[in-house]
Image (cartoon, rainbow, N blue to C red; front, side):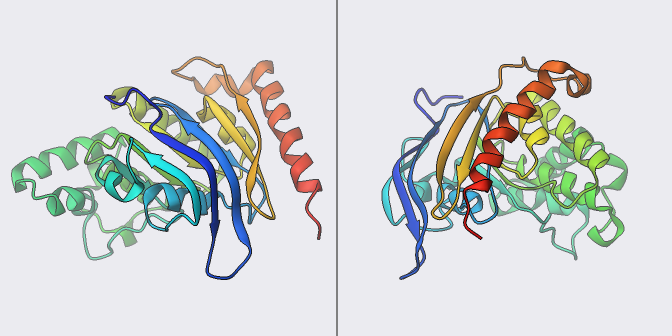
Length: 258
């Protein structure tokens, strides 16, 4: 990636909606080019809100936020967002859904068809190119969504619990596929999840957030080398790192007043 500094830089970042209470307060973090950073924390701590600020979908209340050296609104062409739901257009086939951002960018029909077919092949859905979303399983829909997000080769991929609604086996397979895609077409990732093991398997850095208002409680480095094999999940060092992150998460969850 061309960027020499952090691709995401937050300083004393705060967010509130209207006259409501602070959702985020004093967020300070950096995401470096090539990072896979996960945000984990209790519900309501502002993880998804932080992604919306980075994407430019919601304005900052106070503090500094830069994406690729500029304000988020000017960096939209350098990033892509994968939501909790696949958000596929039901009247378009898988192929056409993946082509959509290329079409909006004005890419020629033959070129966008070739690119979409290549990406569907990478996510093991070449056989489903002509299928509509109603014909796809939840995991297949999410793989189409990932292929669509990668169509324009973004520098930064924002992922808001994309695998949260899937069964554990499908979730693990998609974790592995996501990292395999990243090996072939490198991108920086900012990933929201409630799963400690998922965060540890995917990330090189994890931020644990606390709530009321949302803030950074701890940063944990995950030093396992990439590429990461599925067998990593069976190793003692993996269990130890999961336990470390879980202890920090339980500490912030235990501090929430019910």
